[in-house]
Image 1: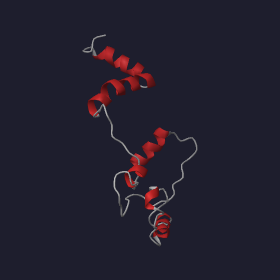
Image 2: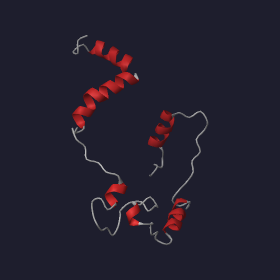
Image 3: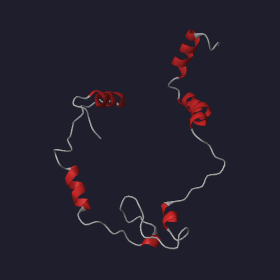
Image 4: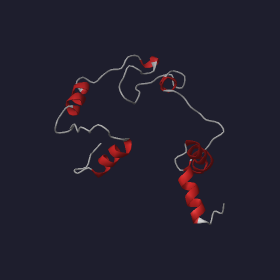
Length: 124
């Protein structure tokens, strides 16, 4: 196999391009080492650890989606009154959200093609 031989490389590409093992090898050996930074040691912590007394003796808040999954040291979540209702109002407003049925027999490719070429365009 000569890398400069386009016909040979093209045939090999057609044989391997959808093979999961080949894709995995390519990502692990070429893409990830080239485009992601690797560290020997990784510093990590969960939200419970970061929001708890382990790092800071006193805390006045915790940023994130409101839920009762706050670090235990912060106590229960203080929900802003009406915010859940406002969110539901927006998500059920026909001026904001619409439903579009898809015929049976759709595939991932056909659905993505439909979204990519829709007129008017979809907005997320």
